[in-house]
Length: 479
Image (cartoon, rainbow, N blue to C red; front, side, top):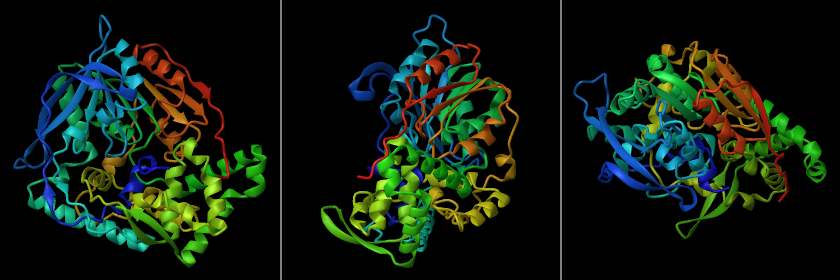
């Protein structure tokens, strides 16, 4: 598992490793037609566009920032509403997503309408937050206390530097991004837009529907994250791990070696809580010895449960750790000792979306006994209070009734946004069709080829019913 395969919050484990020093973003690319290079070098005609918005709409003295998008023109004779893609993260870029395995879906949806890859404020070519200098040294103590202290210290220092540089950081929140999308609609000259998003992109879509729902037509969302689900409940992950453990019964050699996966994971974590392991890794061509506690391994496991191709390696990883083979962690750990500082947008969005007091108490109570503790959500709720005045409040997090036509897609092996959490979000949609992909994970849009077909049919306005698709079970292995 490489660094980019880890969940965004896992990579933010070292977000507090920043030192002072700012560098502003590169000169924006020009607007207009260009050749877009997508998945595996495929090229297509596209248009790059820009528009400006206030950085903080609540502060009339804040600067204006430039937001960017790429438009893939429709091939239809009479295009429908523009389809706006909302990337996950927070911190992912729509334009970056379009260069990956989701590129064929972008192209297919041109049958229906223009497809807009919109980089949210603070990301991609929409990023006006100065980059910070990399840290002088990696974090070498990977325990909960050490990692939490570093991330809080780093974000506080970054905030002070950004504020001194004139950046209105309190303008970076999901409500503001929802208003950006309404400004995008106006900029495009569209009466309505359709929304297509995944993970944090669904969290943003819910805010768009709450604030500007009358200007939205249809919505297709996957791996749902609700208004008060920035921090997932640890008990839901325990239920997910029990389902994974049951699947091992179909793999005799793995079952024989790992008779109880959650129990094995707990045993390894307890040992590392008692005494951190020492693991040597290579960083910038130099050996560095790390002290690795249970929390770091729990973060790694939280990344591995996102998608089946890496989930398949989980039993073997823990079997090796149980046998004292700590060197198996070496390929994974450099991502947790990141040489990058905070980027701003992800931290701000999470702090602003926050967590309700009742849910926070529930998460803290469940984390005491859960297999992964509260590591899955790092650096939330660990960052709470690091920057006062960011939280958008309970009205932002309140659920709503949604009558828009909706296509909701979920993978049964999504350990980042578990099915039980997604069901709570889906209940808000009164006019929904649900697609469940057996054995798919968090990246469900490209997991099964039929999903693309269903998306095209849905945005064409066809009536949709619930459907189930299936993929082979993960190839669980011990090495």
